Image (cartoon, rainbow, N blue to C red; front, side, top):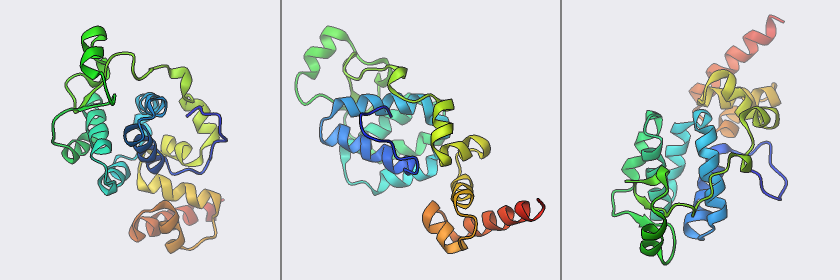
Length: 199
């Protein structure tokens, strides 16, 4: 995401997304929420949905759950996100702290969130792709994103990225850093070593 701060090329993607949704929904930072929503729209194909569902389920905020349920509705063609809908079953939540009814009557609803668990007046969350890095720019800056483009957004890709960075670490450390199961890390380590022995 394009903010004034230095980027972290090793940031955990899904944890960062959930944190940004908390800043946007719980702290009412609509600028962060706008950039997050645009980022998800551009890059959702490379989000590890299993990890995202886990991160959202571990978060305590109802507003965060409502946001991700709305994202799942918006991106309904990507069925990997459907499990996010079960985390919020309540009435639609207003993104704005006050004046939502007035703004909806005046401007209408943001087309991304029509009929979802969020009520977002049009123009509240700016949707400008120039606010986020393009996939080709992110591939050059973020190792895990690059590996996900090569292998798909899986735990395996995340473990592989860890090994590319430090090929000599043990299986337990790969599992810890990639936050995947030991079995997944073990299989990836075996495959990684097999490929590197043949060179």
